[in-house]
Length: 152
Image (cartoon, rainbow, N blue to C red):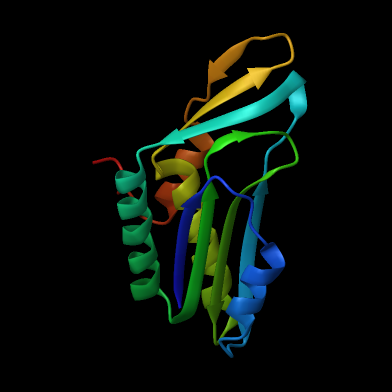
């Protein structure tokens, strides 16, 4: 099972987990990212180029499937204007054993955080806006996996 969705709509975490659990493996690992509301943030706006985003996420999922013995992967990443508390991303992986599920889930979210082609703009209560810059710690985490891809 391979599910990749780049969408504006919210998603059902329980449904995604149930689909992965139904694959009959011994372990399911997941990560759900939530928009933080600190510092007066009232919204996070995400933009992307659909064809490019889909292709790059497809490629990294294929790499994870080749690297670990996975039964299934689910990635959902939202775009558009999201308010604090909104779900922004889901990554789930199922495998016969926990190590593959846990490692692949971490690999996929680290890659999404550092290399997925999304542009993020923060909107604040005082009317100010700012584009979110890449964080050095996210880049370093991705490099731990030996990944330099996603920058073409």
